[in-house]
Length: 230
Image (cartoon, rainbow, N blue to C red):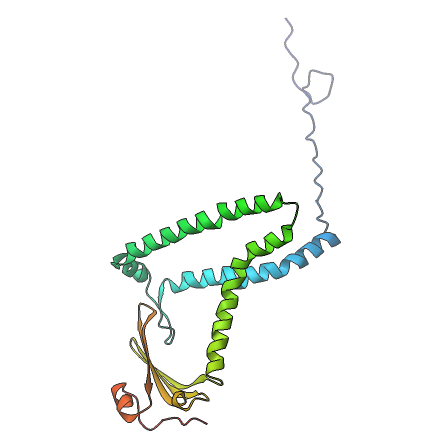
């Protein structure tokens, strides 16, 4: 029996030739940006900016404020999870949870199936579809219009009414402001004092006083900076 020949590296003489490694050609993929992609991005840019300013940024700020203590006057200070501990220890927490759950239930019942059913019904109409669509949209338009008309009626009753604040003082939870009111009604015009009590970052009380020495002394305000209405 013949012994196998040793590998000599030469083909044909008992040598085992290993195949050469295959070269994988890597091609760089080029991303082409055509005019349609640019126009789509430009059209979506205002929506992205609106979401950033009115949705994402407030959510980010709310997350930052949740770990800070702030009375909206002094510089906020970091408190960690203290705000969450106060909320969990609040006896009104479960009342707020129940009210929120009830509101969510009503919003889901009256805000989703009923509008969907009305939309399907109006889509099947063949006559006066535009009229019924306008009537269905009235509940969205009426509340802000009514609010604007009420404020307009209020300011029409007191033309030129406005409050001008000249100073603000914060001492712990108590915030006091000095200034004057401008109004065509003489009884509502003149120097005034405003006092507010802030508890748990919320205004718990708000009162308006006449700017008199007795009220300034009661509110611990100096007497030498009484403003005069122009």
